[in-house]
Length: 196
Image (tube, rainbow, N blue to C red; front, side, top):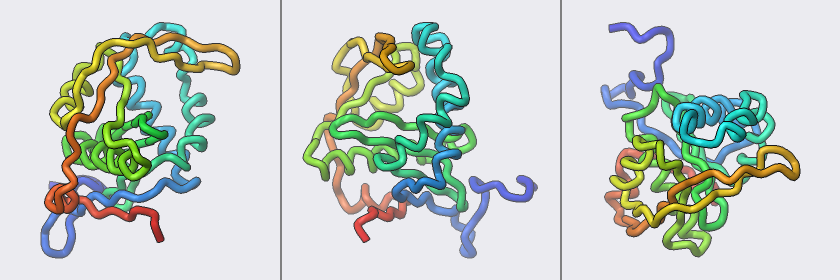
């Protein structure tokens, strides 16, 4: 079956094994791709679940404008040579986790989330947290399967323009257990930690 000229999810290594996901630090050249993944994923998970005021401000250009600011705090997933997802960790918060729709169900999201927890732990935060809108049931189930616990509701203040913020009803999820076993670290993910 043909998948077109380049389908990173179906490329294989010479031995017939699927191309492994590789995680690395984001670089400035990734910003445009991050913006595309972020915009599509944000609207997929948030439209209809957040205040209309926030959605009005989340134009494609808003993601392009904000993506360069993510780069210093972001790790990307690369599959078949293409960036297919990213996770942004700031202090004890996993601030963003997004995967291109073409890479969903491949383990990329789990690899990114585990890597974000590792980044937080290395910064002294053993139990990082993240915010998720209550209506994003797919994301909530995913986080729970990955060992994150729902700690309850809170209003997440989101800046939409200089000096203008919107309170977004969210659920706070916190990582309850971190698997640092060698098996977990080697579960199909190659990682460039950026320590070089």
